[in-house]
Length: 159
Image 1 (tube, helix red, strand yellow):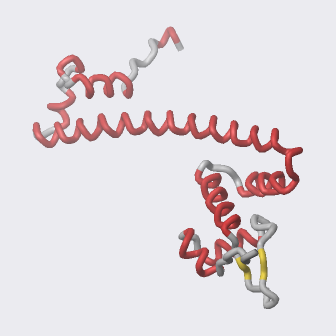
Image 2 (cartoon, rainbow, N blue to C red):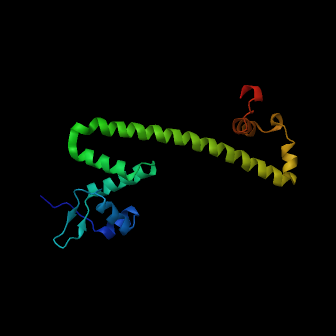
């Protein structure tokens, strides 16, 4: 049986785009519990380690804290008894990401409106000229963005 190909820390840095100090930090923090080492102590990464790095970076992008990523890695090593914990973690991550996407879409809508607003102000020579345009005179897509991003404030008696 052929030996599995391993990679040096420098090669892994090039493959993943992570710095060598980051990879060393991850190792020190226990994110590579099965990492191989040469007799000299030199780290040797496997394809499995590369896949774990991709997962770690993905989870970090979702806002997951390193302590939670470490828990996930610990659970994977514990085997099938932790499947429910891992599933719950990914359900929670998905929910958090979906909520963030909604917030980002709202922010993008306001940016799209402001882009139109300032393009129009540049074309007309002032923001006052754009402010004078009533929503019913705006292009349909822009009117929808305006109404979505400029809700009517509640009356004082409704507060």
